[in-house]
Image 1: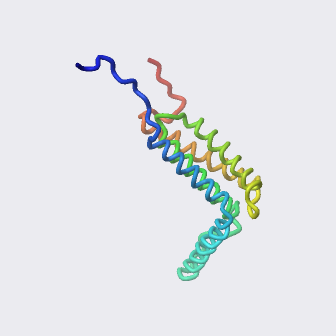
Image 2: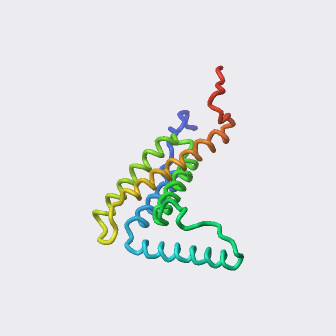
Image 3: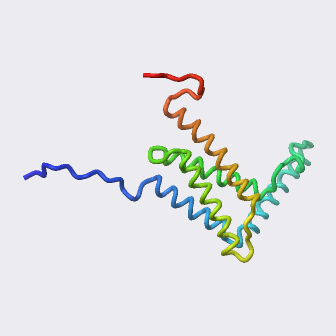
Length: 165
């Protein structure tokens, strides 16, 4: 005898978007609360600049004057990390969450992590410039997500053109 009632549809707990968010949160907490990361980051930045100086000297060019970069490398790292997080989570979770809700959640998470840095780490402190860089990265990432979603949906990006059914 067959079952006449269909099974109720439920969204599984383990989905691509949930796993992506969990990975991002673990990575954000690990990077933000580890006392070793600042030293590793400084070494990576120094290596990058040393490579750039060598390249410029060998090829007799001057691409970037270090004084022209508006933020410190640490703040640029915050901007890139949180912006990339917004892009990844915003695109992977496009069917489940609105992009602006993802941005608000990431912004709140970044502020919470900044506060935790000051409370839980002996060597890390809460920084307003880091919070500003985080939010700037999230806003830039949100811009990319909105454009990508509109392109994926086949809608025009031009907001002056509206279509009515």
